[in-house]
Length: 316
Image 1 (cartoon, rainbow, N blue to C red):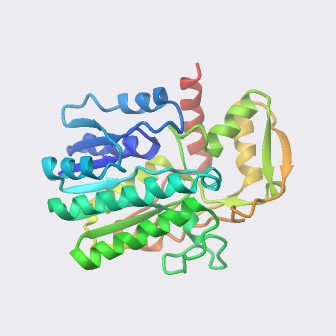
Image 2: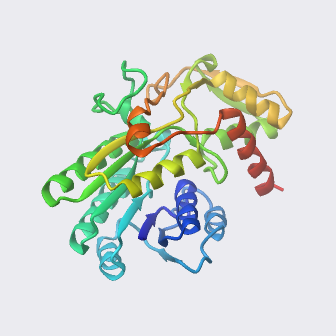
Image 3: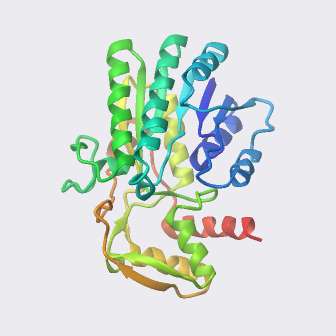
């Protein structure tokens, strides 16, 4: 298959593109090198696979509707893995217009280009943050997702709704994937695993909310990639899936594991839980297991050890 992967120099996108190439697909890898973190780090991600004979890299911005339309008409993609986005819940609070432009308008541009070019299957990244502070635990796809706590998840809800409208109006097959707390090698430097590891290693204080009681459903990158590729292969008409580990751990335990890897105790500054943060994220993955054969394999201890080994390599 010829597959477009957007956000292909980023964390999840680079892993997905690399895995698709390894199994024999053709990949057009798209990224605009947004300055949310260093271009050098993104180019290092890209260098892991971009010289592959079946890969072509295109530097482009999903907000450029004309460019995106022309790419679809030229390449005639079989499937799309749309992973490009502005992430980070907290950063989105004061940057809502940028999030709306990249996440909503960018996704609409891709959906429209798919429709016009005859691409029939579209997989896109959503987020566990769409659930907000729900009382339905573990989070299940049938639960209401209409009260997001920040602009980032609000844009992702909009993308889910827009994808459904394209499915109904144009019979475009769309699958949304709600990622839960993804971590692992190539993780962004603004994400908690990197920030905490960096600060503990440097003997700098870390900010810990609600006395370390919040729980997160940390999901290792290899498990997420397996879910993305299973969704690309499944060809569902229209579905939304949770992709998580299904085993949340408390923040204090997460910190303990990093302390053990680094060999140093964290200096902790306590802070109240912000209103933009839920107390727990917890994925019900029964639907993904049933329809995608999604079965996450990596424990938090094993996954953080692999992340730390990568962290050491890139910081030598």
